[in-house]
Image (cartoon, rainbow, N blue to C red):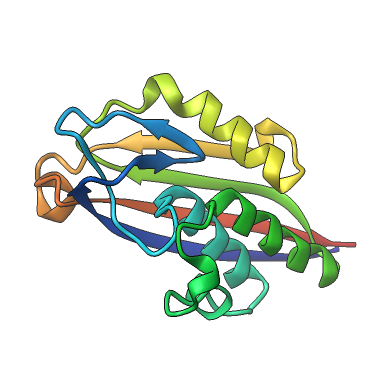
Amino acid sequence: MQLRIGNGYDIHRLVPGRPLILGGQTLEHPAGLGLDGHSDADVLVHAVMDALLGALSMGDIGRWFPPEDPRWKGADSLVLLEEVMALVSTEGWTVVNVDAVVVAERPRLRPHIEAMRAAIATRMGVAPDQVGVKATTNERLGPTGREEGIAVHAVALLQRD
């Protein structure tokens, strides 16, 4: 059996007038902010995709879904995740698990974690217990602590028999 691990990181700016979508869930930010980006800006799904692509040694989401390409304007990141999973399968790999930590001061994410895990697992074609999602604050330090953005760190473990 072969194993590969990939690391993903993404950060998106919080801005007014945009929806806040994390893990495929539309959330309410107390200040009415959402994530800025070319697609739906789902920073959680983006970091997971980067971790998967990293494990495949196939670059990052910017290579596969470049922001200058109008096809990806407003794209649903869960649909993009399905495309990345097709690459995983085509290359002969299966997902052992993914794990992500969302760094955000607000909103409180705990009530939404299970729905995020379920949405990501469904689009990946894996069981929910193969998808870990955690949330933490940055203790008011740095850009995430000042609520300028939301960041996510993710890892993915793949196997090939």
